[in-house]
Each structure stands twice: as C-alpha cells, then as structure tokens.
Image (cartoon, rainbow, N blue to C red; front, side, top):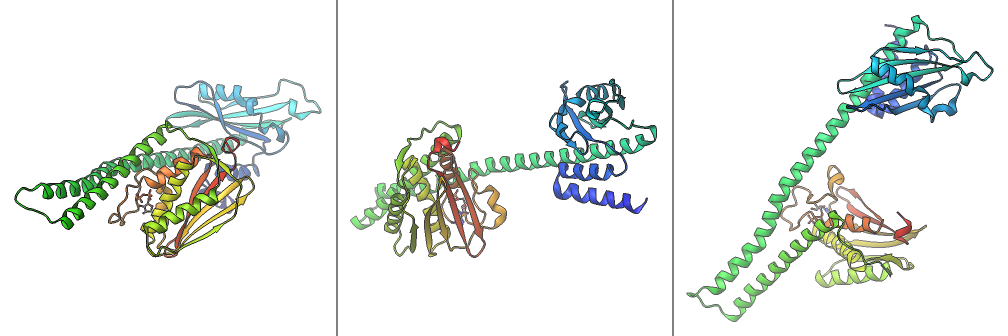
Length: 394
Ligand code: ADP
C-alpha cells in the first residue's frame, strides 16, 4: 500500500473517533476527489420499511456549488440503486451546452447496511463520463462510507443504551431514595409519639416539649418532601401554571438572603446586585429557585462565603449564586439537573435530588436557562439567565 493511501486511512480513522461521521465523510471525500473527480455528492438513506429516500449528507465540491442545498437531482437514481441493489449510471439527455449544469453525469452506488438501505450518488456537470477503470475506487468509497455510517449508528445505539441504563438506574434509586426519605421522618414521628403516649412513663414538660418539637420539625420535612414530589410531577407533566407579574429581582434576592441569614447564624453572604428594571416572572416559583440554591450552598458548602450577583446583559438578567465550598466532581455535572440525582457520598446530608430538577423546570417555564460551573476544591457557581420578556424569548 502506498504511503498516501496509508495516510488517507490513518486520517480517516482518527477523524471518525475525534470528529464524528460528517467530518469523517468530509475527510474521505476530500481525499477521494484527488483521484476521482466529481462536482457534487449526496447520500440517501431509507429507514426500515419506508420507500422515500432521505438526504442525510450532501456536499458540493466543484461546479454547481449552489446545487448543494437542492439535492433532489439524485433522488431518482438513488431509488433505482436502492431498489436494484446495483450501481447505476446515467448520462445527460441534453446535448452538450455552454451551461454545464444542464448536462449532469450521475453515478449511484449502493450502501449496504444490516437494517437500512442507502445510496451514494456522485454528479459531474458536463462530464467527463464515469469510466469502468474508475469504478473500483468509487465502490471502495461507497464501502468506506457505509462503514463510517455503520460506526456512527453503533455509537448512537450505545449512547441510547447508556441513557436507558442510566434512566433505569434513576428509577431504582428513586424507589430507594423515596422510601428512605419518607421512612426517616416518619420513624422519628412514630417513635416520639409512641414514647409520649406510653402509659407506664410520665415525661416532664421540658421533655414533652423537646419531643413535640422534633415531631413538628419532622412533619415539616415530610410536607416539604411531598410538596417537592408533587411539584416535580406537575412541572414534568406541564400542568403547573405560572403567574407572570412584573417583579424586581434585586429586592427578592435581598429578601432571600435575609431569610437565609435568619435561619443560619453567622452565614457569610456577599450581595453584588445591580439595580435592574422589573422582569415578567412568577414570584413564588422564582423565590423557590433562589431559596433552593441558597439552601444547597449552605448544606454542601458549610461555612463558606456565598456571593449572589445580579447583572443585566442585553435582554437578559443574570443571577449567579457562587459558593467557595468543595465543588462538585465534574463527572456528575451532566446529571445534576436530573430528577433524583444526588452526588454519591453525600447521602448523610438530607435531600431528595429533586431541588435542582425543580429549579431547571421553573427557569425553563420562564424561557430562561440555568447552568453550573464548578471547580473541585474551589467552589460552585449556579447561573440563572432570565429574559426581560419570557414571551419574546421563546
Ligand atoms: P438535594 O440537595 O436534595 O440532594 P438537589 O437537586 O438540590 O438535591 O442537588 C443535587 C446534588 O447536587 C446534591 O445532592 C449535591 O450533591 C449537589 N450540589 C448542589 N448544590 C451544590 C453546591 N452548592 N455545592 C456542592 N454540591 C452541590
């Protein structure tokens, strides 16, 4: 094998792994064109038992560049190739003319897959004709094209499988999490109530008050949990209605910080709030998001300074909650906003894994975005971007 062909294969192999199938085909056809002239090419695929070929890739390399978008010129020959499973060549019906794009020479080659059918169609405007000597190279290109696409299908299937496995795991975790989360407060409530009701023991007033306080706190915890589960179900099914009113984010962020400082003595909060005009938002839901991000910072970055900033950029207001806590290992970031996802190893801290999921749904209902940046050992920043007018941001 000559060194150029070797290099071709090496570049193609690297490109498949690195850049995905479209870029790999770009590399393949750019290299092919050095030895096999063509102006345009199109790949058609018929999925399953369908009969209409879909264009999945089209490139214009030479004359007739503008024809790339209009790839329908190859459809007829693609259907013939797919139906017969054989290479089909078609010469122009028109006599040679000065406008070469009116005299297309077409060559269609079958693409062989286990579960779909396809064709690779080359076009030369105004010739030259496709010759028998050029066929082996064209067939090799079609074989390589099918391989690249096959690899892509396999990769997609693997990603789908991995996602399905991950979802199934989340469902299993859900049952375990919810049973555990419901069990723990109920266990306390039941235990302390039974103790108070014991006929063989009398409790002094201070002890009775202590037990009742625990029962009260655990009942609150249970109510929060049930509310969150209901919220998350409503948000996911799209049945939670939003009440949009003009609100000022800076004043709500100040209140949320004050409330949190009331709950947590010595909490170090830095406010960096631009005075921004009102935006259309659902106050109750948005405050729920802010409370949740605050509670998370307090819970997962205990003792660390928390900075809340508000900035205005174009038609967006940007709220950032930054803590200088331990951060989140980066491999967990893609799953953080999923329902019931909790970073392993933090299960001693109470939680449901529903908070960030709910935040994301609420922000999306405002046509906004929420994202996280974290640096393990240095801290975490949650960024919320809200449009001034949610209805225009769709
Ligand atoms: P919960 O707090 O109920 O577990 P969330 O959905 O609010 O659920 O958060 C998901 C996970 O994200 C948490 O379990 C925690 O591991 C991680 N997390 C959230 N906020 C922070 C933070 N500020 N610092 C470190 N980890 C965080």
